Image (cartoon, rainbow, N blue to C red; front, side, top):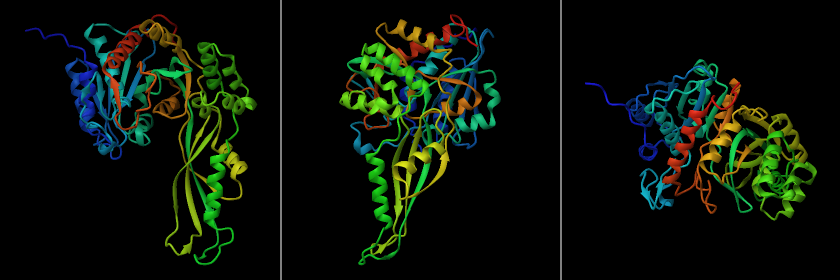
Length: 442
């Protein structure tokens, strides 16, 4: 008896199933979710393999053969999620419930819903017997939310051969609706700020707490925190930020937005915009956020040393040495600084071979959509694939309401309209169909 043709995966059903696996990171424990995904792919006619640095935290790789007319295309996502405090949720964060047309659960937006879109798009190719111009490689990974050490970093360090020839990748970080000045945009992430962690140490004289301390460590801590809160690091207009600002100004038909292209005018333009353009500020300067403080042993002794962890985010082209120099300028003399972790940088967004195709697909699917090449302030697994020279595009298309957008990502009551799972899957399927056929892919 002839076997029945494989059916494509429905994005809602897969997203619900993935949400119901608790893959909170830490500790992750993504194996059950990864194995479920492997089974879903197998049923849809797609074989996959698992690659793991930690047996309980594997990564799935599947490859759909293409015609060889274009380089292989990587599509990727992660299955770990950030913690969810059930007491702060209106519904079970791992229930995967559909309520009033929305899918609820941790990972609905970031990014089990996105993985479901990618898998649905890929299996539609297979079910329709469509052979893409180039191989399509799917990576579903662990550990993105806590550093990618057993996920994308492990893949690039130990299994880079599976990505030989890849020049372009589709992942998270953009595609969703963003609103500015009453106009909706779809940012397509083409570059990311680079993250580094800096340890700041404030030191002072010890002594009994009943004595008045001269220049205590606590006082230095207060000075450091007040300066970092009150001062802004210098504005810098990088090429990806410039491309984003010009596209936004054109879409809004507002010349005042172009004022942000002058680094010396950035503070004035932001002030005159009265908060309307504040979302762009972190894209125009390095930022440092104090996040963890350690110090003191007992309540009746002035501590000699207090340590503050600073989360630094660097605009493209800036180095950690540049950041340390900026810190000395803003808060010199009150702390000593040491870089304890440095993430790789993504590409600078100067090569955008795939962007015209993404824009075409988005406009054809949503005629009112305005695509914008975007620099994003966070980071994704793209930073590791960039080490292989791969251009990454954050494109998980969703049309989200103006009163919400992506604000529920990592927040209580995370959810996504069911309609947007289908919309995203449809856009991504069309992208896979057209890849390498309507444009020259180098």
